[in-house]
Amino acid sequence: MEQSKLNRLKEIATQVRINIVDEVHAASSGHPGGSLSIADIITYLYFEEMNVDPKNPKWEDRDRFVLSKGHTAPALYAILAEKGYFKREDLLTFRRVDSYLQGHPDMKGTPGVDMTSGSLGLGISAACGMALTAKINNKDYRTYTIVGDGESEEGQVWEAAMFAAHYKLDNLCVILDLNKLQIDGPIAEVMNPMPHDKKFEAFGFHVITINGHDFDEIAAALAEARTVKGKPTVIIANTIKGKGVSFMENQVGWHGSAPNDEQHATAVAELKAAL
Amino acid sequence: MADKIATRESYGNALAELGDKYDFVVLDADLAAATKTGTFKKKFPERFFDCGIAEGNMMSVAAGIAAAGKTVFASSFAMFAAGRAYDQVRNSVCYPHLNVKIGATHAGITVGEDGATHQCIEDIALMRAIPGMTIINPADDTEARAAVEAAINFNGPVYLRFGRLAVPVINDKATYKFEIGKGVNMADGTDVTIVATGIMVAMALDAAKLLANEGISARVINIATIKPIDKEIILDAARSTGAIVTAEEHNVIGGLGAAVTETVCEACPVPVMRVGVEDSFGRSGKVPPLLEMYGLTPENIVAKAKAAIALKK
Image (cartoon, rainbow over all chains, first blue to last red; front, side, top):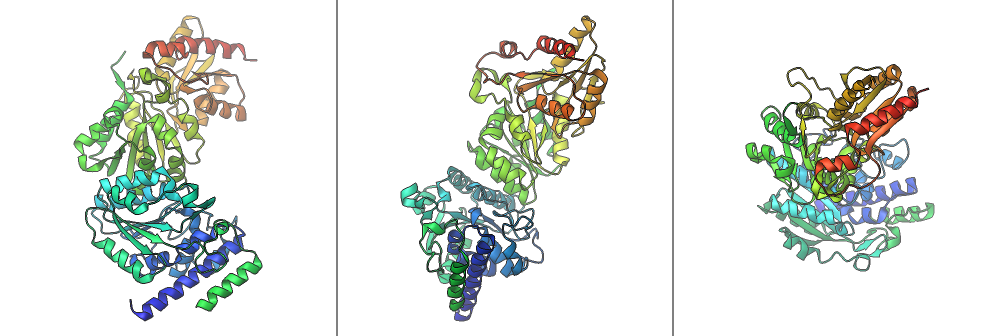
């Protein structure tokens, strides 16, 4: 990828990370760890990959995105604000009683949110429904969904995987955020869902494994997914939970807790230094 | 009595008929032969999608289809549609208020021989408790077919409850007009009102005749839409007859009896007796002895009607 493009994406992703930390700090609650781990992927999706129009969020032919790991809504809101769906300052109302930015994504209340999610395992199925509808209606739009690695312990994820392969949903791209931590600890210790590649392959997926923080690898994987016919693609993205904020990286405690004022200031300073 | 037909048959026939008129798709979870969505599948194979034995996934897939702009029916037995897939119905379908129409067949104990695991007697209670859900429990073929079309034309999620058992056709197809949220007066009376739903409506009419033989005048109301319930007709019945008996093939907790009780208690308190499954699981058996055993009979409606009248001040 051209250096200028790479620099631009990195800048946006850093701003997304600042937004995430700001949101969770303002709300004094939320899920920073898994939001930061998908910041690069979601940045590439919204700024390079997906065909969307912030001025027309309900545009019929738009590509769809479902955040199946709905608790990382701060990342989705962060990118939607950067893309221009709503004002960046609104992010500071996250989780407030008078805000349209709910703790988990609400398609009815938030411009740009294509599907309500939060109860784990449900989003990937809804994404299957959207991809199937594109096929029924002979539409070219693609559907993307980000699934958590902890989420993949839900049986419904595999019901959906079976469905996607059975109906040959090659217009569906599942991205698995493999940050290897869940609330109670490392996924390998809590309830090991790995290996994801062999499982998805057995279910009939085209499988691509990448470093989820490398824009060249993200770009190549999504481009490859577009060429796959007759089966869905899963991109297994190896990521770091809390990526970008040194004291949050690989720390399970930052799954669902908010930084205090001091930690927030440190995090923002670190991120701004990277800009 | 007129011909008998199960409302699940009516459901399948209605889908197949209405498929020409409306743009919708149908999902099932490996029960198309039993839920009768197979009738639609035969006519519109390209608009039917079997989801296999994975009801939770089916319900969320349906939500995705609706979110992408298409009306969709999702079918299974009531036990699996409302029970197994409760989370998906609540969070994928109802919270975003999507156009998913749930065709739940084999509701209640008239499932018969399959027994308690398949006899859902709490689906109305579960669905009633979800904000924004509309619940329709048709009494016969005429009403079931009309309800399917009304659900298509309705904006939002609908839970349609159908039975396995063939039931008499009590509404005249030529004159019957179905409206979501409207109860229907089936017989006039002055001493007590029987408010019934589903297969119990025909029994309520039989009970009214038995009561008439004893000089008791019973009004009969058919409530197909359990949510939102027709408060107007229920309160009118409470005021005019002063006593109510409800009758449903469902647990007495959380269903029609509860909805009617809540309605009258808040506006016109009168005695309400409930006929239904008395908070117990079903069991295997032929339908007639099951109905007898669980008190879903005209005779039990009569007994409860007299008890309600006796409670009048």
